[in-house]
Image (cartoon, rainbow, N blue to C red; front, side):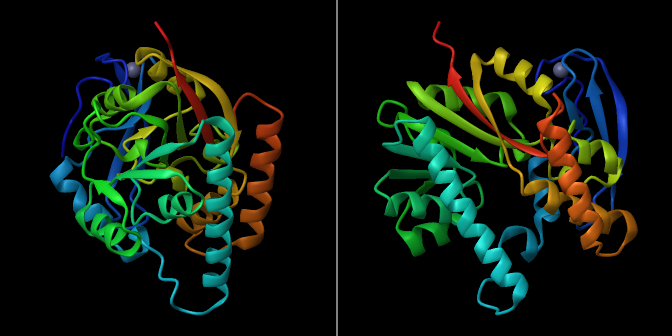
Length: 296
Ligand SMILES: [Zn+2]
């Protein structure tokens, strides 16, 4: 375990305990979320070091969904996945010039392959070797281990995307700085994140599935994310809701809380969360931030 003395966003040494939670998904081990007294960032502390992290991802469910099986859940999953692919591409096309794209944490490359088929020039970063090789083998994609493996002299991007990835990355500040070095001055950075101030987060407390301890190292809300972006000279252009996430997260959270599937309650709470988000500053369960570099 790695104990952070400083806030990974603003470097302050002052923080307080906010939540004692568990890894309900896999290990059942206890983890603590602390809140920075300076910038308000919630972060998992202590957290597994990079080498120790592997065992918390050691589940077939977490890495990929097997779509070869037939059944209602697979059908729903396939439908939702295709819906998401189309939605992500429309956001990329709507908010960037969209000529070339770098997807960070691209996994096995389904989204990049979808972009490639629509005529974009595609590049990916994936830390884990297995999905990286699968993406290269299945789709012939150019996937590298780290952002810096794409030299900035040769590779500048119109669009860089991180779909629920930033909260998993140990080296937070170096990552956003590398991103800045690879984004064209008129490029767009698109980051999807869970929102720990959403109604469902406040409702489920330590059982909120999007804390996903200890895989999620940071738990941003709009305020703490805005401060983090300010430190690295990015500004928010637009925030888009991910309205399906509140249902999915409520379904998982119900299971963590009661040990049972409770579809009705999950649908109800997912709907309440979306309704409250549409009427307040707290925001949706998950949100997509469209960002531009500040030109100095
Ligand atoms: Zn801080």
